[in-house]
Amino acid sequence: MLPHIDSVCHTGFFQLRQLRTVRGSLAHVPRSMPRLMVHSLTSSRLDYCNSLLFGMGAERIKRPQYIKNAAARLVSGTRKFDRITPVLRNLHWLPVAKRIAYKVVMLVHKCLNGRAPSYLADVCIPVDTLPGRRQLCYAATGQLLVPRTSTNISRRGFHCCGPATWNALPVSLYVPTTDLLTPFSAVAWLQIRPELCKRCLQASKIHFCIHKM
Image (cartoon, rainbow, N blue to C red; front, side, top):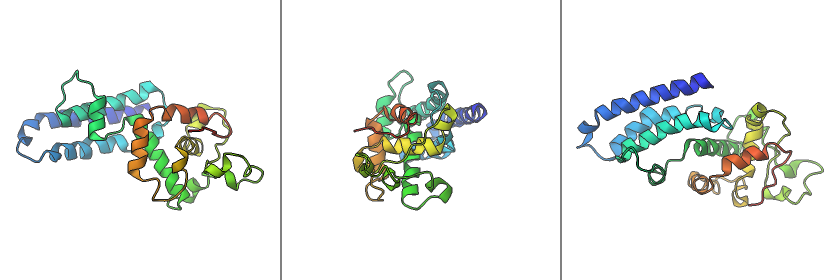
């Protein structure tokens, strides 16, 4: 994954430098134009295949986050040494790690609603459909089966990280209906629950995730 991260970071910083050179020419265009340009040239590259980075160390995730921070400063006109967290919150931009978790959650939601390929949907198994486990106290909450794994690479696979991330959501979002798990509710929850990525990785180390929110 290092070559992929290197390529994304190199291209992202190059595009941001090009946008800075023409920033003065954008004074008379709508305020949304710089943001659209950043989305089309930088954010789209950060989002491409970024779910493959799920579970990687903070040192690897930190480099794409630098690009997102620089893009936020360019769009908002924030100075270099100002705090970037309030800027990201005002722009409604998720940090890279939370964005990855959000995409995994939305993919699981599509699997549960029959809008994903069968090879992905087959690994999202509700606990209440398993013989001998449907009587467990947490089976009725809509949690998914998290298979037992012994390696870190296995825990990063969708068959583990998908159900574990889904189980880390509040119980009110477990019900697989399109009306409940809207992009707004998922993003809002990920913004206020910064421990999601850590907790879902811990959950993938055991057979079932039994978080009680």
